Image 1 (tube, one colour):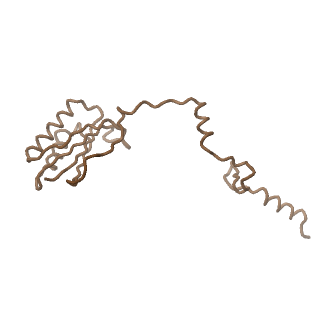
Image 2 (cartoon, one colour):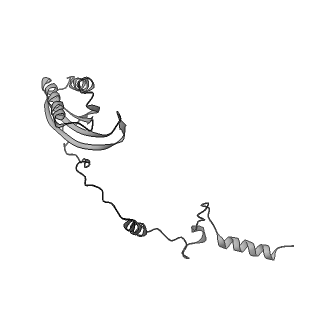
Image 3 (tube, rainbow, N blue to C red):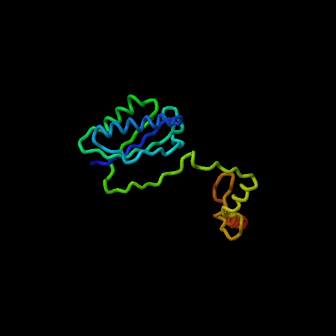
Length: 173
């Protein structure tokens, strides 16, 4: 038996009924090939890195299953997702797993599981900026080379300019 993992990206508005429909359809295909479903998990809703089929969010579903070698299970599942469920499933990815590999994984929290962001007041933001450890470039312990002219980001060296000025005053005739 070969172990596979399928990751489905569905539309963000998917209902529990549609998820149950996907699960039953996948189970039928796997059982018709004398295989067994190891797990079927809804991961939850996540913000996507880029829009997929004009959706900025998507719901991930993870399917793990065992099937005998030499069957066309993956092709049958892809055909199901591309024809019958193409308005629900945006992307699919199947991977063959090692049979000795553990099924444990660490997934990030979905948008439904994460708490709402706390809003900070401007006063809190000032304290965070102060605590960042930004160095004061005007302190004397830094060389003139560490001081930067903020208008054009070039290094300014006051000492060298003063020395050059003295040489010019004494001047050579």
